[in-house]
Image 1 (tube, rainbow, N blue to C red):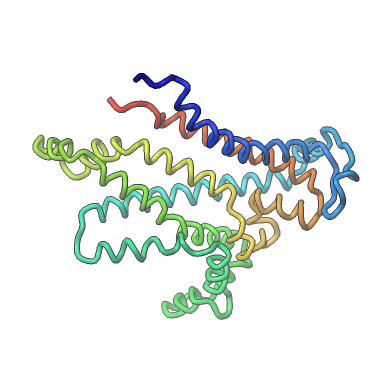
Image 2: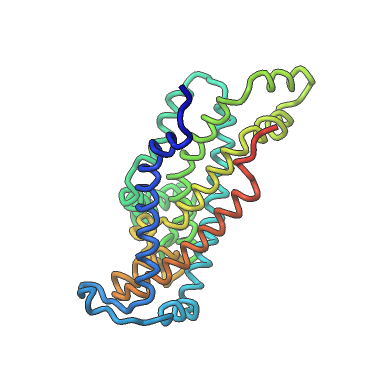
Length: 291
Protein backbone atom coordinates (compact mmCIF):
# COMPACT_ATOMS: atom_id res chain seq x y z
CA UNK A 1 0.00 0.00 0.00
CA UNK A 2 1.34 3.35 -0.99
CA UNK A 3 1.80 5.87 1.85
CA UNK A 4 0.06 9.24 1.47
CA UNK A 5 2.30 12.23 0.73
CA UNK A 6 1.20 14.07 3.87
CA UNK A 7 2.26 11.29 6.26
CA UNK A 8 5.84 12.59 6.85
CA UNK A 9 4.41 16.02 7.62
CA UNK A 10 2.09 14.42 10.16
CA UNK A 11 5.03 12.90 12.03
CA UNK A 12 7.53 15.76 11.72
CA UNK A 13 5.07 18.66 11.87
CA UNK A 14 4.54 18.81 15.67
CA UNK A 15 8.29 18.81 16.37
CA UNK A 16 8.86 21.52 13.75
CA UNK A 17 6.09 23.66 15.25
CA UNK A 18 7.50 23.32 18.77
CA UNK A 19 11.02 24.21 17.61
CA UNK A 20 9.72 27.15 15.55
CA UNK A 21 7.76 28.48 18.53
CA UNK A 22 10.75 28.06 20.84
CA UNK A 23 12.99 29.96 18.40
CA UNK A 24 10.59 32.61 17.14
CA UNK A 25 8.89 33.60 20.40
CA UNK A 26 12.04 35.03 22.07
CA UNK A 27 12.98 36.86 18.86
CA UNK A 28 9.51 38.39 18.45
CA UNK A 29 9.42 39.31 22.16
CA UNK A 30 12.82 41.01 21.94
CA UNK A 31 11.76 43.01 18.88
CA UNK A 32 8.53 44.00 20.62
CA UNK A 33 10.37 45.01 23.80
CA UNK A 34 12.70 47.17 21.72
CA UNK A 35 9.82 49.55 21.03
CA UNK A 36 9.04 50.11 24.73
CA UNK A 37 10.67 51.83 27.67
CA UNK A 38 10.40 49.27 30.44
CA UNK A 39 12.34 49.18 33.68
CA UNK A 40 13.38 46.02 35.47
CA UNK A 41 11.01 45.05 38.29
CA UNK A 42 8.10 47.14 37.03
CA UNK A 43 4.87 45.63 35.67
CA UNK A 44 4.46 45.42 31.92
CA UNK A 45 1.36 47.60 32.20
CA UNK A 46 3.66 50.47 33.13
CA UNK A 47 5.80 50.13 30.01
CA UNK A 48 5.90 53.29 27.87
CA UNK A 49 5.79 53.22 24.09
CA UNK A 50 9.14 54.54 22.86
CA UNK A 51 8.83 53.98 19.14
CA UNK A 52 12.21 53.90 17.45
CA UNK A 53 13.98 55.77 20.24
CA UNK A 54 15.71 52.65 21.61
CA UNK A 55 16.98 51.66 18.17
CA UNK A 56 18.13 55.20 17.42
CA UNK A 57 20.00 55.38 20.72
CA UNK A 58 21.55 51.99 19.98
CA UNK A 59 22.95 53.06 16.62
CA UNK A 60 24.11 56.42 17.97
CA UNK A 61 25.81 55.01 21.08
CA UNK A 62 29.60 54.79 20.53
CA UNK A 63 29.88 52.21 23.30
CA UNK A 64 27.66 49.83 21.33
CA UNK A 65 29.92 50.08 18.30
CA UNK A 66 33.00 49.70 20.49
CA UNK A 67 31.50 46.54 21.99
CA UNK A 68 30.59 45.26 18.53
CA UNK A 69 34.15 45.80 17.30
CA UNK A 70 35.53 44.02 20.36
CA UNK A 71 33.10 41.17 19.71
CA UNK A 72 34.16 40.88 16.07
CA UNK A 73 37.83 40.87 17.02
CA UNK A 74 37.24 38.33 19.80
CA UNK A 75 35.22 36.03 17.53
CA UNK A 76 37.71 36.29 14.66
CA UNK A 77 40.77 35.52 16.80
CA UNK A 78 39.16 32.78 18.90
CA UNK A 79 37.38 30.95 16.10
CA UNK A 80 40.44 31.11 13.81
CA UNK A 81 42.71 29.73 16.51
CA UNK A 82 40.22 27.04 17.51
CA UNK A 83 39.65 25.88 13.94
CA UNK A 84 43.38 25.69 13.16
CA UNK A 85 44.29 23.94 16.42
CA UNK A 86 41.30 21.60 16.34
CA UNK A 87 41.90 20.50 12.75
CA UNK A 88 45.65 20.12 13.32
CA UNK A 89 45.16 17.97 16.41
CA UNK A 90 42.52 15.84 14.68
CA UNK A 91 44.90 15.21 11.78
CA UNK A 92 47.76 14.43 14.15
CA UNK A 93 45.67 11.90 16.10
CA UNK A 94 43.79 10.52 13.12
CA UNK A 95 45.64 7.22 13.29
CA UNK A 96 45.49 5.49 16.67
CA UNK A 97 48.75 5.22 18.60
CA UNK A 98 49.52 4.33 22.19
CA UNK A 99 47.84 6.84 24.51
CA UNK A 100 45.56 8.35 21.86
CA UNK A 101 42.35 7.25 23.58
CA UNK A 102 43.49 8.70 26.92
CA UNK A 103 44.56 11.96 25.30
CA UNK A 104 41.24 12.32 23.50
CA UNK A 105 39.36 11.76 26.76
CA UNK A 106 41.44 14.30 28.68
CA UNK A 107 41.37 16.81 25.83
CA UNK A 108 37.58 17.09 25.74
CA UNK A 109 37.28 17.78 29.47
CA UNK A 110 37.52 21.62 29.18
CA UNK A 111 34.32 21.88 27.13
CA UNK A 112 32.49 19.87 29.81
CA UNK A 113 33.32 22.36 32.58
CA UNK A 114 30.79 25.05 33.45
CA UNK A 115 31.77 28.45 31.99
CA UNK A 116 31.62 30.08 35.44
CA UNK A 117 34.13 27.54 36.75
CA UNK A 118 36.34 28.14 33.71
CA UNK A 119 36.27 31.88 34.33
CA UNK A 120 37.16 31.44 38.01
CA UNK A 121 40.00 29.05 37.23
CA UNK A 122 41.54 31.35 34.66
CA UNK A 123 41.06 34.36 36.93
CA UNK A 124 43.29 32.70 39.50
CA UNK A 125 45.78 31.70 36.81
CA UNK A 126 46.02 35.28 35.54
CA UNK A 127 46.14 36.86 39.02
CA UNK A 128 48.93 39.44 39.11
CA UNK A 129 50.25 38.51 42.58
CA UNK A 130 49.44 34.85 43.15
CA UNK A 131 48.66 33.61 39.65
CA UNK A 132 50.18 30.44 38.27
CA UNK A 133 51.10 32.06 34.96
CA UNK A 134 53.22 34.79 36.52
CA UNK A 135 54.84 32.18 38.76
CA UNK A 136 55.83 30.14 35.70
CA UNK A 137 57.10 33.24 33.91
CA UNK A 138 59.13 34.14 36.99
CA UNK A 139 61.09 30.90 36.61
CA UNK A 140 62.41 32.27 33.30
CA UNK A 141 63.14 35.68 34.79
CA UNK A 142 60.08 37.45 33.39
CA UNK A 143 58.65 40.11 35.66
CA UNK A 144 55.04 39.66 36.86
CA UNK A 145 52.45 41.17 34.52
CA UNK A 146 49.03 42.56 35.31
CA UNK A 147 47.14 40.34 32.90
CA UNK A 148 43.71 41.60 33.84
CA UNK A 149 44.73 45.22 34.42
CA UNK A 150 46.15 45.98 30.97
CA UNK A 151 43.66 46.30 28.05
CA UNK A 152 45.78 44.32 25.58
CA UNK A 153 46.74 41.60 28.06
CA UNK A 154 43.15 41.32 29.28
CA UNK A 155 41.96 40.74 25.72
CA UNK A 156 44.64 38.08 25.27
CA UNK A 157 43.50 36.49 28.54
CA UNK A 158 39.87 36.08 27.47
CA UNK A 159 41.01 34.71 24.10
CA UNK A 160 43.23 32.12 25.80
CA UNK A 161 40.39 31.05 28.09
CA UNK A 162 37.94 30.65 25.21
CA UNK A 163 40.42 28.81 22.97
CA UNK A 164 41.31 26.45 25.83
CA UNK A 165 37.67 25.59 26.45
CA UNK A 166 36.33 25.25 22.91
CA UNK A 167 39.18 23.89 20.78
CA UNK A 168 38.11 20.39 21.94
CA UNK A 169 34.73 20.93 20.25
CA UNK A 170 36.41 21.50 16.88
CA UNK A 171 38.67 18.53 17.59
CA UNK A 172 35.73 16.19 18.22
CA UNK A 173 33.88 17.33 15.11
CA UNK A 174 36.94 16.85 12.91
CA UNK A 175 37.86 13.47 14.38
CA UNK A 176 34.35 12.23 13.59
CA UNK A 177 34.48 13.72 10.08
CA UNK A 178 37.89 12.30 9.23
CA UNK A 179 36.84 8.87 10.49
CA UNK A 180 34.12 8.81 7.82
CA UNK A 181 36.37 9.71 4.90
CA UNK A 182 36.25 7.01 2.25
CA UNK A 183 39.38 4.90 2.67
CA UNK A 184 39.33 3.90 -0.99
CA UNK A 185 39.88 7.50 -2.03
CA UNK A 186 42.82 7.85 0.38
CA UNK A 187 44.32 4.61 -0.86
CA UNK A 188 43.91 5.69 -4.47
CA UNK A 189 45.69 8.99 -3.81
CA UNK A 190 48.47 7.14 -2.02
CA UNK A 191 48.92 4.79 -4.99
CA UNK A 192 49.05 7.81 -7.30
CA UNK A 193 52.03 9.05 -5.32
CA UNK A 194 50.36 11.85 -3.36
CA UNK A 195 52.41 13.15 -0.45
CA UNK A 196 51.06 13.74 3.05
CA UNK A 197 50.33 17.41 2.52
CA UNK A 198 48.67 16.71 -0.81
CA UNK A 199 46.40 14.07 0.70
CA UNK A 200 45.61 16.39 3.59
CA UNK A 201 44.86 19.61 1.72
CA UNK A 202 43.63 18.24 -1.60
CA UNK A 203 41.79 15.09 -0.55
CA UNK A 204 40.88 14.84 3.14
CA UNK A 205 39.99 18.43 4.03
CA UNK A 206 37.94 19.05 0.85
CA UNK A 207 35.97 15.88 1.60
CA UNK A 208 35.06 17.10 5.10
CA UNK A 209 34.48 20.74 4.10
CA UNK A 210 30.79 20.43 4.98
CA UNK A 211 31.66 19.54 8.57
CA UNK A 212 34.26 22.31 8.72
CA UNK A 213 31.64 24.84 7.58
CA UNK A 214 29.05 23.69 10.11
CA UNK A 215 31.64 23.72 12.89
CA UNK A 216 32.75 27.21 11.88
CA UNK A 217 29.19 28.54 12.01
CA UNK A 218 28.51 26.92 15.37
CA UNK A 219 31.66 28.40 16.86
CA UNK A 220 30.89 31.83 15.40
CA UNK A 221 27.47 31.80 17.03
CA UNK A 222 28.90 30.65 20.36
CA UNK A 223 31.70 33.24 20.24
CA UNK A 224 29.17 36.04 19.82
CA UNK A 225 27.03 34.93 22.73
CA UNK A 226 29.78 34.07 25.22
CA UNK A 227 29.19 35.83 28.53
CA UNK A 228 30.03 33.93 31.71
CA UNK A 229 33.79 33.54 31.23
CA UNK A 230 34.33 37.21 30.39
CA UNK A 231 31.91 38.26 33.13
CA UNK A 232 34.00 36.45 35.75
CA UNK A 233 37.42 37.23 34.27
CA UNK A 234 37.20 40.95 33.53
CA UNK A 235 33.55 42.12 33.63
CA UNK A 236 34.41 43.99 30.46
CA UNK A 237 37.40 45.78 31.94
CA UNK A 238 39.76 47.41 32.24
CA UNK A 239 37.53 50.21 31.06
CA UNK A 240 35.49 48.62 28.29
CA UNK A 241 38.42 46.97 26.48
CA UNK A 242 36.95 43.45 26.84
CA UNK A 243 33.27 44.37 26.84
CA UNK A 244 31.70 42.28 24.11
CA UNK A 245 28.18 42.90 22.90
CA UNK A 246 26.50 40.22 25.02
CA UNK A 247 28.10 41.65 28.17
CA UNK A 248 27.02 45.15 27.13
CA UNK A 249 23.46 43.84 26.78
CA UNK A 250 23.67 42.33 30.26
CA UNK A 251 24.93 45.56 31.79
CA UNK A 252 22.29 47.62 30.01
CA UNK A 253 19.46 45.35 31.11
CA UNK A 254 20.43 44.40 34.67
CA UNK A 255 22.79 47.18 35.77
CA UNK A 256 21.30 50.13 33.90
CA UNK A 257 17.78 48.57 34.04
CA UNK A 258 17.01 49.67 30.48
CA UNK A 259 15.34 46.57 29.12
CA UNK A 260 14.05 48.28 25.99
CA UNK A 261 17.50 49.49 24.98
CA UNK A 262 19.00 46.09 25.81
CA UNK A 263 16.40 44.43 23.58
CA UNK A 264 17.29 46.80 20.73
CA UNK A 265 20.98 45.90 21.07
CA UNK A 266 20.00 42.22 21.14
CA UNK A 267 18.27 42.65 17.80
CA UNK A 268 21.47 44.19 16.42
CA UNK A 269 23.44 41.20 17.72
CA UNK A 270 20.95 38.82 16.13
CA UNK A 271 21.28 40.54 12.75
CA UNK A 272 25.09 40.46 12.87
CA UNK A 273 25.22 36.77 13.84
CA UNK A 274 22.64 35.83 11.21
CA UNK A 275 24.54 37.73 8.51
CA UNK A 276 27.88 36.16 9.41
CA UNK A 277 26.37 32.67 9.64
CA UNK A 278 24.65 33.07 6.29
CA UNK A 279 27.87 34.32 4.73
CA UNK A 280 29.90 31.41 6.09
CA UNK A 281 27.36 28.87 4.87
CA UNK A 282 27.05 30.61 1.52
CA UNK A 283 30.79 30.56 0.92
CA UNK A 284 31.22 26.94 1.88
CA UNK A 285 27.84 25.73 0.57
CA UNK A 286 27.77 22.71 2.90
CA UNK A 287 24.37 21.57 1.67
CA UNK A 288 25.61 21.08 -1.86
CA UNK A 289 25.87 17.44 -2.77
CA UNK A 290 29.36 16.13 -3.28
CA UNK A 291 30.28 15.18 -6.81
